[in-house]
Length: 360
Image 1 (cartoon, rainbow, N blue to C red):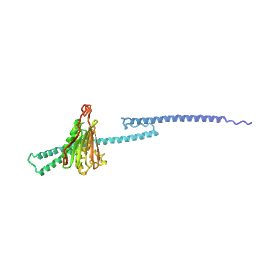
Image 2: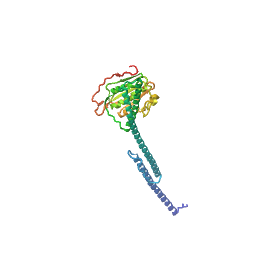
Image 3: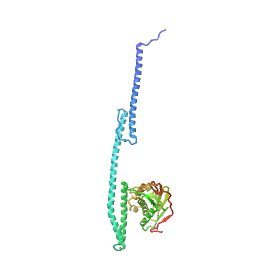
Image 4: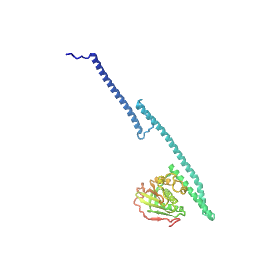
């Protein structure tokens, strides 16, 4: 029997030392990793909290930059984010400057148009006044050629005054100076007045003018502006219609008065329906386009919107167009339909105006 050799005491001691050292190093590594992770998480949480503050409602995203607390990857990302915020702030400042400059130019343009229109209207009114005096023959009878020339002067002057009025209306709308004076108004009566005035624009074209619907048809509107809206729509219908009819139809709906202006004109192409109410937008024959500013429908829509109403159009090429206006018929102040407590009775039935240049 031969006994197994035993390890020397020095080797056992070395092994124990290595085990203790390894355990110590692992412990230190765990502690360092824990501290590093905690610090890293603290930095990430800090950056996240600062970004959340920027995203809160009412907070400015271009405030002070986020403080860079370390030079590690989180610090690099924080610095890059600060650069991005700085660029955004510079772009926002430039945008605000451009916006303020555009608003200033718009105010100057509106003021210039208003002043210019007033300066043009004064001599124009004098021209129209003298033309009316001469046509009244207070200074003696006129021969046919002179009368026709004066009629041309008056017609051209009236057209020019209409263009100036459009510019003034646009200036008032854009500057916020236009105010409504709403009352209980019979929309049927206003439509009949508009059609009577519009009959002079028909000329020799075979066009019949009609108004139908309930009477009275009360709307809570500014009477002058309602007349302006309908006059524009009826005028356009007459201008673009060669023959047939122009009709204003009125109906009472729940809390609303619906007014429709239809014609038998050439209609509007589908591609133009979405832009027909845009500023300075004109569609239709070139000859007809040359007689307007392209502001009429734009102003009409703005006026309808100011009343809390809506305006829409439906059209078919070669079949005609129909504009629909819906205006409030309920007065919030009195709590009654059309500003009157109780029920309003209305008698329905078509009303026909005498045709001009065509059959009655």
